[in-house]
Length: 570
Ligand code: SF4
Image 1: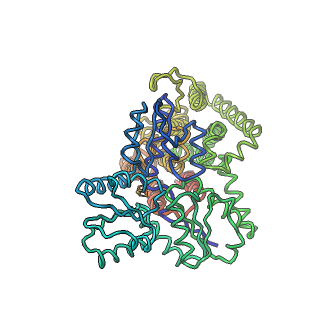
Image 2 (image 1 turned 45 degrees about the vertical axis):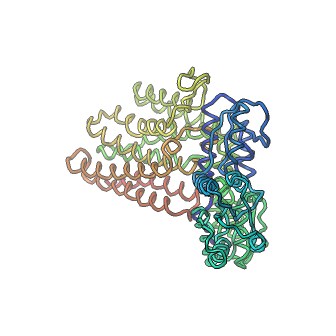
Image 3 (image 1 turned 90 degrees about the horizontal axis):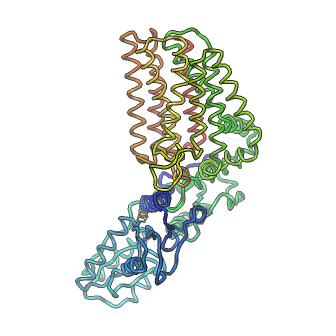
């Protein structure tokens, strides 16, 4: 069976922006943060906010203090004034596309036009829009309600941004025939339109549809209605525990989509659970997937990748086929990765629920493995020489201190800082650590040519940078929730993808040029194939969400391992 994830599934721009704004506010300000009403209609996100002590207020008190964030749906203008008058600092996270509708209504209301809003009168967005209609607003949710409205001399017709496109088309067609003087505005958000079109197309190509998202979320409910209307078996679930596999039993392919307020981690988790459930029927596949997940969760794959890269760095400089430093790199990376996963159990609940559970249940064994492998790595480096040992020791302390509160804060007022709090620190630290163990440590011992070492160091760190930023993009929502400062959080997904691609293209050029000017061994250009493959994969993954997170991680880690395999022949 095939599972297809809709390209449009998950947070829309407005919701992502509002969630980002509230999370940024919670890390930036000391004051209590509130949202005016629930930030979005998704129970898991609301629970996550409560865990971060961000609560919703339903009524505006006479007096208050702290920061209030206006959610993506917007509010009536008088509520915004009342919040400020009560003493709150207001951060307006109204989606720019909703603001556009507010502006349209306000402009025409000033000229005396009536406003007909096609949308649910109890929905927060519609309540906010009505506030701009200066008492001349009317809502309709059916043709019958439209017919029952009086005839207006001047009126505008707008839709709630998440309205059903076909229904609004019907309204528009009727108005054009019967009330041609009404001004009709196209206010359905492009994101909603795309989502609804995609679900219709997916329903044609697949045997069943699962819509993931809050039962209170209007846009998710509309998606579920459209899915049900296609005649295919359709489920609307808030999370994977609600899946009725009986209904799906005859389906050969399932389309998975999600509302605009559904975070990525819920979509990923649902995908994994369906995948797991289906695998149970295929023992071989299940065993292979279990093995893949085990290698990923325990970081064995990452550590073999580090060993391979070390070997490749050595071979590029024409050093002996000696595996001593590859082993040190493997042990170091295994130890650091496991420890960091142990420290990150909380954030992994969002990005890697299975991994978080695995680390929680096996803490003792994993701590033992991390300490033993770290110790073994240090011992082997000591055998290589004092400089090698000291370098690895420094990198180990840096790796360990990443999550610890060690630095009196100067970057953010009044808080104790960890290296983790420095913007982009996670990505940079991993790249430096890997670059040191895979390239610098062996170079120190082998007394490599300085220029060759620089080239190889850039090659190793470039590949690790691309790998790390790519993984950070996959984990962006969970990282933001837990306040991790990764590069994709600083720069955004689009720019991060662009940086990965530029880095890899630079790598290809670097290896070819260094080979031509004899800075590396004869057939070094062969290794340019690795960044080339990575560029293609990253381009593919950027556009296509048909491949699950685990597959993507596995493929990228495996590609790093191929550096060692490829360099064995040069
Ligand atoms: S659905 Fe569209 S209008 Fe509504 S919050 Fe999302 S991006 Fe904004």
